[in-house]
Image 1 (cartoon, helix red, strand yellow):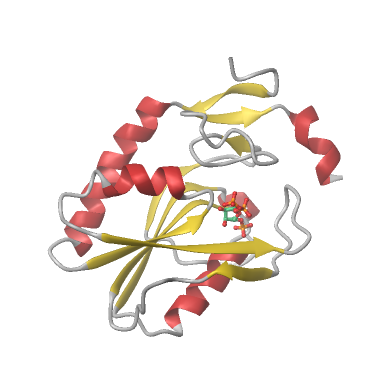
Image 2 (cartoon, rainbow, N blue to C red):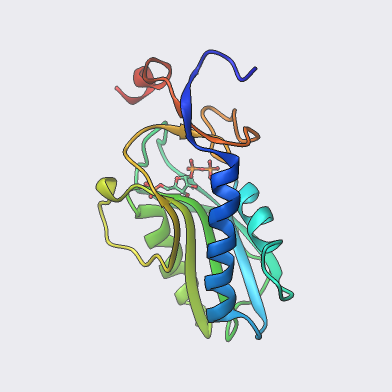
Length: 183
Ligand code: PRP
C-alpha cells in the first residue's frame, strides 16, 4: 500500500503511542501546572506535536517555526535560515521546543540560540528521534523518544522528497531510493 520504496517498519505506531505516554508524563512532571508554549518546527514535527500535546493533561498553547537549510537534499548543510518566525513573543515564557529528529544537531543548535536570545524563562527540548552517531555539535535534548541508527527514516511527519509524512509508522527507506541524492 505504501509502495516499493519502504524497506521495513522501524518503530510501529503502537510503539510510538506508548512512548508518547512516557514523554508526556515526564514533561507534565517538569513543566505542568504552569503556562506552557509548545513550539513545533515545521514541517516534520507536526504529527509528533499534534499527538504529544493531546497526551498532556494541562492546557498549552502552540506556535510554529519554519526553517530551511541551504543546499539540503537528504543531508543537512548546517546553514539554517528561518523562513517563518514565531507569532508569539516568548520573552519570560516557558517553552517546549518540539522536533521530529536531531541528526547533526546543527538545526537545533541554531534554533536554541535563536530562541534563547529572546530570553524565555525556561526552554526545554523534546525530540522524537535521535541519531547520536551523526552528531556534529552537542545539543541540549531534554526529552528524547527513541535513539535510532543512521538509516533514512520516513513516516510520522518525516519525509522523503515531500512524501511519506502521513505514513503512521516510522519506516526505513530503501537505500537505492535515496543514495543517488546523497552522492
Ligand atoms: C529535519 C528535522 C530537523 C533537521 C535535523 O528537517 O526536522 O529540523 O532536519 O537535522 P540536523 O540535526 O542535521 O540539523 P528537514 O530539513 O528535513 O525539514 P522538514 O522538517 O520540513 O522535513
